[in-house]
Amino acid sequence: MTLRTSRTILAATAILALCTAPLRAEMADDELNINGDSPVVTKAPAADFLKGHLDEVYSGWLFRTDDTRAMEQDDFDNPVMVFGEQGMDNWNVVDGSEGKSCASCHGKIEEGMKGVRATMPKVNAKGELWSMEDYINDCRTNRMGAEAWGWDSGPMHNMTVAVSVQSRGMPVNVKIDGDAAPFWEKGKEMYYTRYGQLELSCASCHEENYGNYIRADHLSQGQTSGFPVYRLKTAGVVSIHNRFKGCIRDTRGETFKPGSPEFHNLELYVASRGTGLEIEGAGVRP
Ligand code: HEC
Ligand code: HEC
Image (cartoon, rainbow, N blue to C red; front, side, top):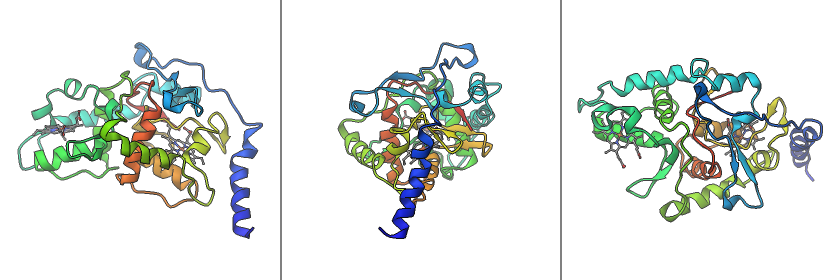
């Protein structure tokens, strides 16, 4: 064994196994009733394809502290709503050479975007797998004659929050068969691939070790039904692809870019693991 591999194994062991025994904690036994409304489902029986892997699926919200969970219970306390409101304002703003706003074609955001987040990502008319960000930029560049927004830019974050809120309480509803199947298969393969010097896959942390602590973090199942989320640590909105990037970086691996084909495939597979959960639109995380 080279020094390097033995170090790797040591590091991975230190991060996961050593934390396991003493540092396992129950998730919260709590209901997500945003603004006192009927509960958003955060706990559900797992989809059939997860048989042998998971019996139940849980939102990341259940693994957060009382204080962080409370922030998501009330839109006045949820910092993500400030960004969502800016997105709603922008919905009506004319931009680009065609003299159009989002509202010109989609009408009121509450009606035009209802349920949209729950179906993302999905295969478009050209047979490509698109996330919400791709649809928004397609409308901006090809329909409005406006500039594309960066995947993790302020206006894009604001708009994805505003659109996601319109699916709050609606079940995750991604298509994984037919033309979506090849993308889903690739995403699944990626989920079980070990990355980085620590040789950890998504499953190593989010399937085999959820409930355990890794350093100061209470590991969840890494579901995406709460996204986009506001992170207290960075005081800003985090997209699904950005979260994936951070997780792979934590394995000390070479990561992929937000918007890359790899992250599109992974987004579809991870979203499908959350089948049974409902869209939170939008969450708060440490
Ligand atoms: C000129 C009309 C037009 C404008 C302006 C427009 N869109 Fe669209 N948008 C469409 C059409 C048509 C589709 C359907 C495209 C498809 O299904 O391939 C669409 C699809 C979408 C989708 C995917 C919906 C779904 O159910 O799959 C989103 C999200 C979206 N638009 C957001 C926006 C946002 C945000 C803006 C403003 C920044 C905007 N659109 C501006 C016409 C428009
Ligand atoms: C070394 C362990 C580790 C690995 C490997 C890992 N993650 Fe994570 N991930 C974390 C930690 C820690 C958090 C923050 C606490 C939590 O929600 O689990 C997190 C959070 C997430 C979240 C946010 C969940 C929420 O509700 O806020 C998603 C989504 C996610 N991970 C997906 C992935 C995917 C996909 C992979 C594989 C590319 C992956 N993670 C690999 C440790 C890991």
